[in-house]
Image (cartoon, rainbow, N blue to C red):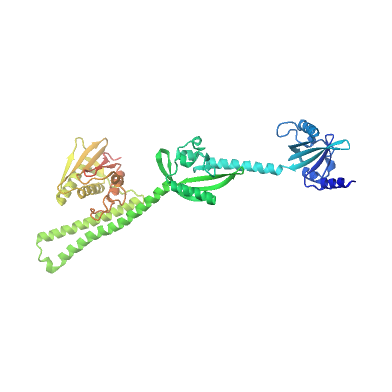
Length: 488
């Protein structure tokens, strides 16, 4: 055998690539790599067989294997070579995808086709897995409850957004694609956006980056951004997912504010408790000092006793307020013992008591058809009226009058307490029923724990009524509450 023939024979037999020889339309020889890849034990099992016999009936493009093989062999013999993909069948019937290189060889008048296969099954499997992975990514991207954005790396042009993004921002998908976030006006702080972009460029990712965004109706929402550089079909993209933490931030701010108010409450409570205690101790000391007490006349002693009683009453109200708030905080309703009560008599009695003690003019006006008797917890409604009148007096100048108006509103008795005091701002009105909130927390503020109005609202609501406040700064306040006329 010629030296070149020996070299070719060695190359043919030992090549890692499957090689086969086609003559007269049939495989007449192959190397061991071809036997292995087709899953046979010996090449004699499939030699002298045309290519279409080792193939499924149809190729992936829909052409029959017989027709297509015949045409390709003709073209290879005519043009000298052909390169194409082909599906063969292994011995076990499984599909083998190969890239086929056919080269026409004419040796001593004998026409043959030299065939080399390159196994594409792994690539096909890899491509299939990649498609499945991309499909899974697409599904996860779409159903993600958090807004998700896919952008190109350089200019940040949006490639795609999910449904959650459309819902959160009010920007339809087709109006977002092709624009960047600057053009859509999403970022509130441009500096934070620039830092975010620099981090992505430098590190390829960023986690839990907090920023504010403008969304539907110019609302500002706070989000936590996490972003990654990912590859889809070998191309790089930036995947951004935004978790809306606006509610959490508001709750956090509310908790900070509540803790601040509680701290102020503790300080105020200590002061409010100390004041009457100091008064009680002082007047008790005066009365119990034998040498001093003889110098006081009976009227002075009575005044001291009244002061002691008033301070004890003040301490009792403070303790009751704290206990009531404790019940409300734990989710309990305040205990009610309802009985038929003349609301007119009750209001006149409380008004006379306050007028006598404070030397204020307090009038009670009964509107036509106003109810006389309703079912209420007398102690609790007295607590409401005491609190509202006390506030009206605290925040009203000396010499001003206070009016109590009783009327009927459907199946409810409506009571209004109207003063000519300092009034409140809209923000103060919005917070007046908050626990621990005091309209004025300055050093010159009137006394109080900031608990009364929250307790008042709870008492009225537990009775089945409502309470509201109307006020203008510098023009006084009107507080109205309703109580059912019949016991529901």
